[in-house]
Amino acid sequence: MYAAISPSEVSAPSAGIVPLRRWADGVAEVSFAQVDGGTRLKHLYQSDPCRVLFPRQADGAPKEAVIVTTSGGVVGGDRLTFEIGASADCVATVTTQAAEKIYRAAGADSEIDVSISADDCGFLEWMPQETILFDGARLRRRTRLDVGGTARVLAGEIVVFGRRARDEKFTYGFLHDDWRIFKDGRLVWADALHLEGAIDDRIADVHAFDGAAAVATAIYAAPDAAAHLETARELIGDGGASCVDGILVIRMVNGDAAALRAGFARFWKNFRHETAGLPATLPRVWEV
Image (cartoon, rainbow, N blue to C red; front, side, top):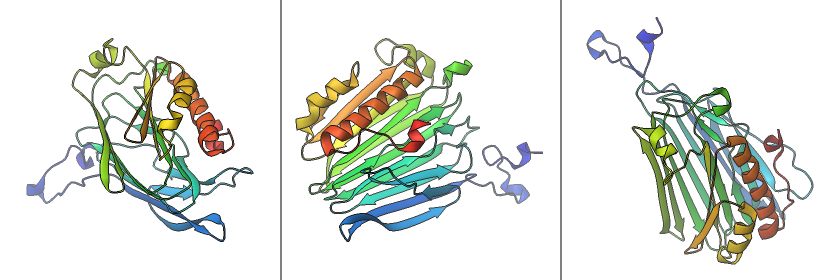
């Protein structure tokens, strides 16, 4: 019964059945502006299965927005679009309520598009919780960051290759994770991770991931990025950091996904304190 209506597998135009292209097409848009000396919500738009929550932040913490995907995970053909913005002098954090699960796809790719726009903002953070790839998952994710003037942005992500604690691994499927960073309209950094085919062999390769269970990337785009290179290297331990054209890039890998998450969280809270004087704490959803 269910196979007959699966949008990933059915194609019967001759029978008058036009398959859906996706189960879900969710959107979350949130932007901040400076009003009366404080960061305030400027724009909000949300459509199923996305919701945006605004928890009460701790004293001294940035204005906080939490994106929730109510569908419980992403399947083949789903598309999620996140648009995040902040203007002059704003200090804000945008994160997600929980890890995003990308389930096995029968054919169509799942898509996640993230657009971040920061114009002279004081400090904008995009730090979603980890993305977990189930075996057979197909994910195409595009992250675009537009930084203008004196804006400072800290953005990151964690990708987990299956739930190894449950003896699950990401051995086949598709991942294309693409970053583009523009500074005052000029492309200054581009990067893409592409995995397809014998993914387990590539993850096991000592010259690639050396059996890592998870990888993390953090980007600090700011006029003072180069000045914080050594700070980043001290905070990440076994990871790597480099700075190119005002873009500080941090990489972390670990054979234990939980350990990587913990290390990434430690880096984040201490780096935000060192660079922006923000509290060395995490949003409450990250502490769970």
